[in-house]
Image 1 (cartoon, one colour):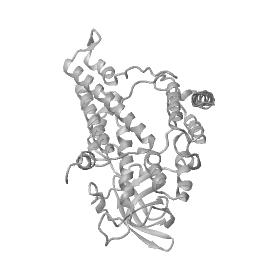
Image 2 (cartoon, one colour; image 1 turned 120 degrees about the vertical axis):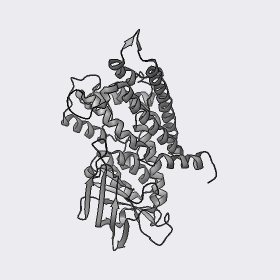
Image 3 (cartoon, helix red, strand yellow; image 1 turned 90 degrees about the vertical axis):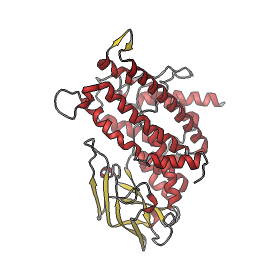
Image 4 (cartoon, helix red, strand yellow; image 1 turned 120 degrees about the horizontal axis):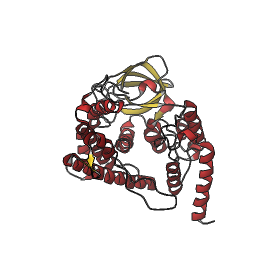
Length: 405
């Protein structure tokens, strides 16, 4: 049987599976506001996707993944898009950050222990990197881990820990040799957050909400078998994970638009719909199909063009990653550009909404207007999280452009 026939059979079987397993309320939900998916719908869809490994479709089957080839993965995305839904989400810290690192650096036992639980959504993860005195200079971290028998005993704290209050486990950078040069005495370790000695304190941002936390450790235990890689060699793993994180952040922020869905078997695609232009019409008005404000009209058009180009660049980078090249220093370029694009989008929305964008709470403003105002404030943190823009510029200068130190 030739490859084309194999792929066509896979597509037909996938369509039948989707029809049988994807809840009706989760299809075309963005367009059909009458659909009100229940928690049971989401749970059933997650269970179905996880049973096939589709939450991590390209991971090996022996670690809970789908084991799909590049071509099969593309077909999966097309068919999911065709019925107007998404693969059931699981922790992006597991799928986009820890999982790829375990595939590259983890032991066979660690892969079999932790990766299937990521795929099924059984375990939620968070990242223990930044500390109150170690942000951009991450290698100066001071959280200590001391070996005692079959455990490491951890003391210290982490800050800006996204989702720690919802997480079950943490992958964490700890100092295991305080006498070594700062980059050489760091280890990468995994441990359970549901144990004595862990204190999690949520942090509030200027936007009025936050998923960030500060986490304190007092004699917290981590099994020695959950040390990833070699002792005191965690900085290499840390840098690799940051590349995965920056790739994830750049793809997740608004600004990575892509062409609209293709028809099955066709390479034809239409231009993406301009969300900004559509949302601007009630505020700016239009005449002859054009927004009345020519300056904002021009800025919106330029943003949409830049967004489309950025989205296509991300797709090309993703295809290179699937070919085995993995994320590299170029992930810093994408993260930097995505941060600037998202801030630019928020500024545009504020300009479009005018006085309607000044609301914080109360009557006189729609929920969408209040959401965008808070989102504008939140966007200011984009140039800090995941590595500051200044750090990204240094990485680009040295690792991409090859400029001298």
